[in-house]
Length: 129
Image (cartoon, rainbow, N blue to C red; front, top):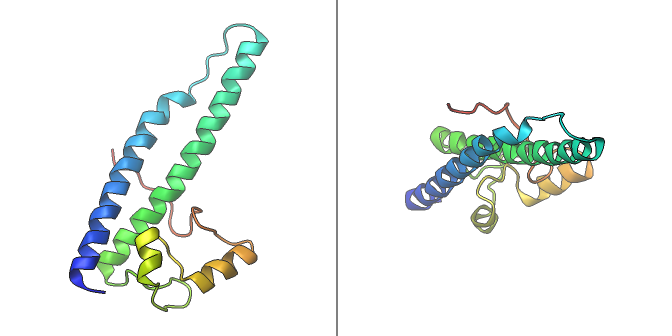
């Protein structure tokens, strides 16, 4: 992979990281629950909070993958499968630049019940303030 290709991936990943961070921070107020009103209103509020928590979880997992991909760029290992060290095809990276696996290892991970696309696979999320 050329330096200019890596630079373009880095720019895409940085833009995606900024977008995910903004979305995560904007969703924080949706986690508050007011237990006022009738039971039906309380149930609706709990349901909305549950949806917000699931959305935040998914976005946080995506952010962890983006952060890991950026770290791999800094370390010079971007584009290598974290499982087998084979090169991840350029077409796959163009579609999902934060992909940690080659196609073969991704399929194996999904079949084994391991991390699938969009699930966390490396260290925990560290949000910048």
